[in-house]
Each structure stands twice: as C-alpha cells, then as structure tokens.
Length: 147
Image (cartoon, rainbow, N blue to C red; front, side, top):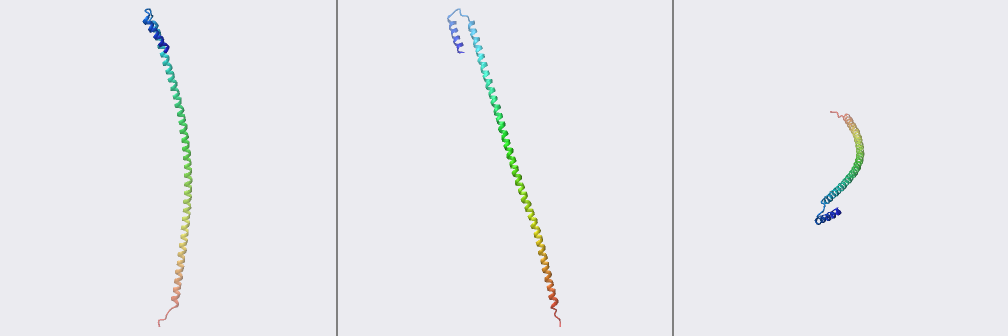
C-alpha cells in the first residue's frame, strides 16, 4: 500500500508538470489501489474467520471440560448418596434390633411380674386360710359353758 501511495504521489506530481500526461495511468493505479484494498479486506476476513474458528474450538473444549467436571460431580454425588443410604440402613437396623431387644425385655418383665403377682396372691390366700383355720380352732377349743 505504501508503494502505491508513493507511486500515486509521483504520478500526481508528473500530472501537474507534464501537459501530455495520460490520465489513464492514474486510473490504472486506482484499480491497483482497489485490488490491494480487496486483498487486505479478504485477508482481514480470513483472519477473522480463523479467529472465529479458534474461538469456537476453544468453546467446544470448554464445554467438554465442563461436561467432564459435571459428570465427575454427579458421580461423586451418587457415591456420597449411596454411602449415606448404607449408613442410614445400618443405623435403622441397629435401632430396630435395640427396639426388638427392648420389646422382648418388656415381655419378660411382664411375665415375671405376673408370676410374682400370682405367687403373692397365692401366698396371701394361704396366709388368710391359715389364719382362718387358726381362728376356727381357737374358737372351737375355748368354748365356755354358760352355767
């Protein structure tokens, strides 16, 4: 482009000085300016297209990396969830076993209390019967004649 500008300057100076100067020479130079401009424009478009493609590729790589990170995060979440479910199940089983043990202990204590109560009632009945027999014997043996 600088060479064309320099050549244009020379032709302009020559056109001012030389009366037989052919203006088509400047038109030819203007066509060269146009061709050079189109080449620069095409080069710029090509460069922009290349930058666009690089940016799109970079974006695809970033999306792939994001997908990998998201998949890793979801896998970690699944593992954590499974571990928590295993811990919950173990804790629930332990609580159920303790509850069953407490239920059995309660049933045994109820049976023991029932047996103890029945024995206490039987002992009380036996004691009452013995007291009644003793009272009858005493009452029958100590008869006083009314005379």
